[in-house]
Image 1 (spheres, rainbow, N blue to C red):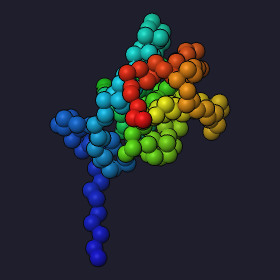
Image 2: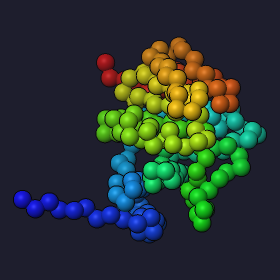
Image 3: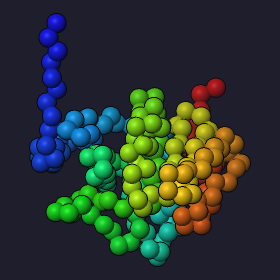
Length: 191
C-alpha cells in the first residue's frame, strides 16, 4: 500500500490561492483547509455578538471584526478567520501584510458539528499562544450553551459556562455585560 503525501504549501502559495478564491481557507503549517459555509443560525449568533460588541465599544480603543478578518498565529504558523474578534488599538498587522491582524484580545467561535472539537482543542491551544488574547468564547448554535475562558495569568485560564438565556455574561476585557438571550436572538431550537 502506497501512501499519498499531501502537498505542503508555502505562505506565499496560500496567499495566492486565497486571493484568487471566492471561498476562504485556513492555513495550518503548510496545509490549506477549506472553510465550510455557516448555517443561518451560525451567522445570526456571530452577527448578534458582533453588533453587541461593536455598539458597546464604539469610541473606545478597540476594533471589532466579523468572520472575514484573517488572523495570524506565528508560533503555530496558522492563518485563520475567527467568527468574531476584538483587537486593541492600534491595530497590529503581520509584517508585510495589510490584511492580517496579530493582536486580538477577544476571540469568539460559533460551534458547528464539523468544527466544535477543533475549536475546543487544537484551535484553542493555538489561540493560547497569542500574548494579547484575554478571553475566548465558544457559542453553541444548537442549544443555549456558552463556554467562556478568561486568562487569569500566564498558562492559566478560568472556565465558566452558561446554559440559561436569563443569565448575564460579563466580559472583563472591556467591562461589558451580554445577556445570553441577546446572543440567541431570532434562534429557534428544535424541540
